[in-house]
Image 1: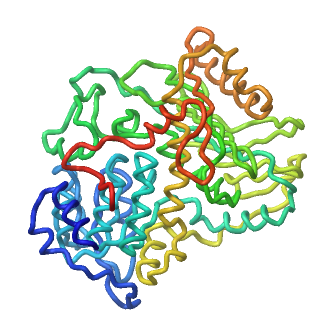
Image 2: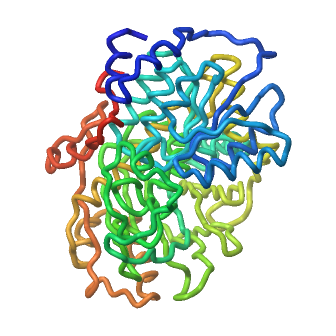
Image 3: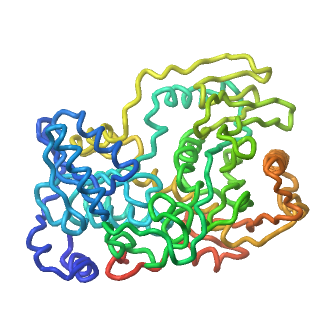
Length: 497
């Protein structure tokens, strides 16, 4: 770690020389398989509890500390572990946690706006990181995470689960073999019921036990216009990335992996809106995003409204291809229906059922799930080996797949209210996108939403500069301005990591 960079970091965090004195320079590239790996979990009101439980099952791994900005969550977590005979320290401020030499790795499931900064700071402190999806809140932040991981020789994993599903390895080999012919369209979807978050301008509930300044961190410190602070931060741009960024990284990562695409698409476009209720949410609950990859077009669909008003069941994914082939994922129950279908010349793969079908719907191949390795176990494996290649989802892969979500949201944020005719015109020539739009419109119609009266947002087609993480062409200046955000001091992402 270069002294200049460390000074910049300290000045922007707390200015404490105590941190400099306490951090060691050791960035060992080897580790004995018998060495104990000491882990701290940062942010665990939600999915962080999964991280905790996974680490508790592992031999040679010791959970050392918990960190959360909400003291009530933090204290309860410590008590829960104590009841299991596990003693951990409690830390409310992650900066204090990073001062410690007795922590080897950070596993973080904070709100989205904290993911990148925790990761970069941890790398600078010589710690490996497992970071939840979406790995970052902006594309620039994601690239900074990759730079930090490489510079400080840290193992950094993006917690995107679908590469860990063993059946998907077999499906990828099958797809690449050409047994189903050329891929025509990759279809991703996230149908997950989302209720209104309410609208109480400036009077939302912030728990007394929460350090709100610390919770906001790099995000703007704004009054809460929704009923609750926790979880519903997903649906405002200041802290969240909408459903596209919340669950989309999983499906889009699987798509990019299956297509063997190592970068961003040539173009992207979004249309959608927030329908069915009026609340403090800013992100769309219904969205159609198109990605123009050289290998195959990608159609991604978000639905937050159920099959029928007031219901709990979400739609099964059903589509009809331009050749009249009926695609249907094998979804049952009331839970979220989020997955991927690959449409090929000679058939299709439904990743919900781990199965391949011919164009008549006859099962031709079942992919066996011989046991999945959870992301935390995979992370610890790579921490021991010090080999990035051992990671199912290295931070660069996690960054690129998360970037796809940000690209779709940037198009949406630059969009304007439009009539259905304008949306149809924007999709003209792409029959698969037109078919998806008609299903989108019918779904909203069930909920009494007439796009002729309640306008959706039509985003522009945005072109990516080849080989770069930047836009070119029409609207490029506005789009590039959304590649990063202004951070609130002292929680500032370093320009040079």
